[in-house]
Length: 58
Image 1: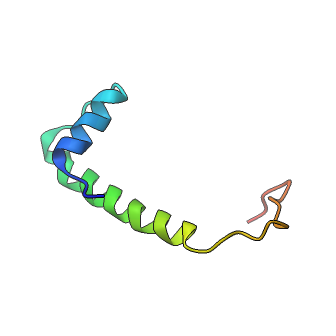
Image 2: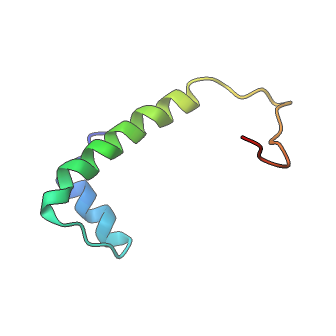
């Protein structure tokens, strides 16, 4: 998906947010990075036996 200023404005408006024009390039860049990370996350199937840990310990 191509992330454009128009798309970002419509997404912001749909969520009741306002994004200053000078912040649009940064928002677009961040959404592009997230798009790549999401693709990596879903690129491999998850083993059906994998379960989330009950407690997170870093």
